[in-house]
Image (cartoon, rainbow, N blue to C red):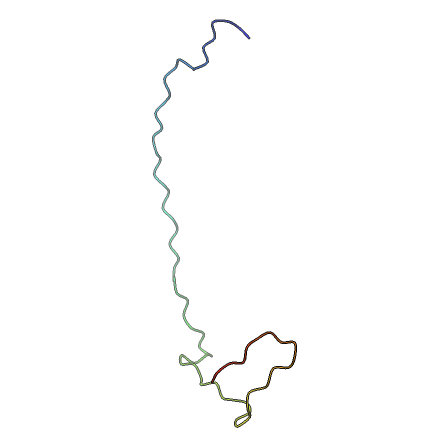
Length: 68
């Protein structure tokens, strides 16, 4: 260790000037249009087996029965 060497740098710290951020590229279309082959309104989901009771969970299943 050399004597007469200060622990703190005596030079003044340079000022940090914040640089402006470059502009972000804007997307051409932020929301893509719906494909033409799909309808705009969702179709109602039909019950594949009408009139059938809900399946009874077998032993070993840890899900509680659901209420209708």
